[in-house]
Each structure stands twice: as C-alpha cells, then as structure tokens.
Length: 265
Image (cartoon, rainbow, N blue to C red; front, side, top):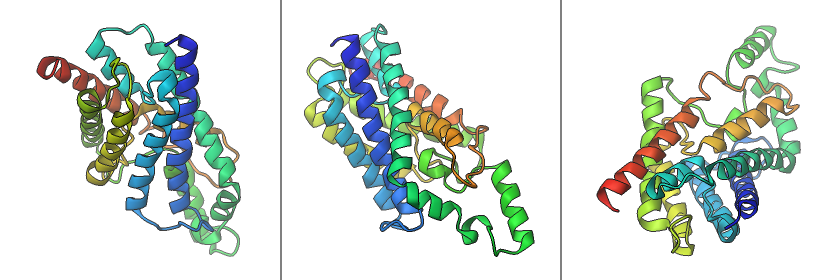
C-alpha cells in the first residue's frame, strides 16, 4: 500500500471511528437526545461497532490501524517503522475531523445542554450555586468533556496509567494474534469483527476507572477540538490528565508487540 493510501485510509477511518464513538457518548449525555441516559452498555457497544464500521471502510486502503498503539505494536512485530509517521498523521487528523463532525451532528443538543441552568448554574439559579459552577468549570473538566475525551473516576496517576496500559495490551495482543490480514500489516475482514468485540469487552471490563481511551489520538485529537470549539460554558479540557491516555496506550501497544515476538512469533 502507498503512503497516500495509508494517509487517506487512516484519516477517513479514524474520522468515522470518532464520529460514531463520540456520537454515542453525545447521544447518552446530552439534553434533548433521544438516547439520553442509555448508559455504559450503550457506550461500550457503540464504540465497538464504531471500530468495526471504521475498520471495514478503511481496511482496503490502510489496513485499518486507526490507533497509534496498533501501529506501534505492528511495527515492533515486523521491525518496520517506515510508514509509522504516515499512519500517525492520518490518525491524528481523522480524530480531529471526527470530533468536529460530532459537534455538527449534535449542535442543537450541545446548545440546549450547556445553557441549561440546572446543569451549569445559568440564569435563574441561585447566585452562590452559579458562582460555584463557573469556578468548577474554569478549574476542571467541563460538563461535556467526556463526549470528546476520557477522564478518571478516581485521580490516581499510577493506577490510571496502569489501567490504560493493561487495556491497550489486551487490545493489541488480540489484534496481533487473531486480527491481522494475510499481509500482517493491518486488520483483516474477520479480524475487524473480532477486534470490535474485544473493544466492547475492554469497555465493559476495564472501562470503569478511566473511560478506556486505549488509543492516543482518540483522546488527544478530540480534546484539542473541545478546547477550540465555541461551546458555551464548556469549562476546561483537563490538560493535566491528557498525557495519560496518550502515553499509557503507547506503552501498552509496545509491550504487546514485544510479548507477541517472544511468545507467539
């Protein structure tokens, strides 16, 4: 596959991944959404089907890595890093495009949610409650940041990092042992289906502590979009935490690549 095919495939595929994955988070979270409060099960399956859809669309072009941790794991398995920058560039751009598309698709719901006085302490709320709400948003994560990126339920750096490493390790080991195409450089037809259910399993089993980024661009690209979008009362983008869902998955992917070479190759 050519560099242009890789870049185009990863850009389109990762955009679809974030559009559908971020879309289910928006559907469950935002006021005036028909799926509001559908719960964690809907989110886990939504992300799993997002992976499957994106992989089948981009697989013929790029092998559907859609995740820098996958690219790193495959590069360690093969010892070939030549296309890594191209994969990374397409994935990062696609993640940002997908996040913008989520905002467009749910524009009215974002406005309704973020201007609701019961949620953000807007007009009509008590002055004290309003002040506390504004102060909290300025200092910490905003009320809809979870649509764009992940965050921990309990802030514990070592645990949060370990959770992302473990989750990504499981994902990559499954991909490297069960999911690759005949060329060994991306997801195959059956592998995309297997991987999508592995993502659901990780979400249900390991997603509770951190929201399971298991993908650096899935978190960083949309987090940047959240910071740039003109969303009312959106609050902070939690940059103090942002390195964990980037570094953790990369470490997990690298470890999985090494374990594969030792145990399975």
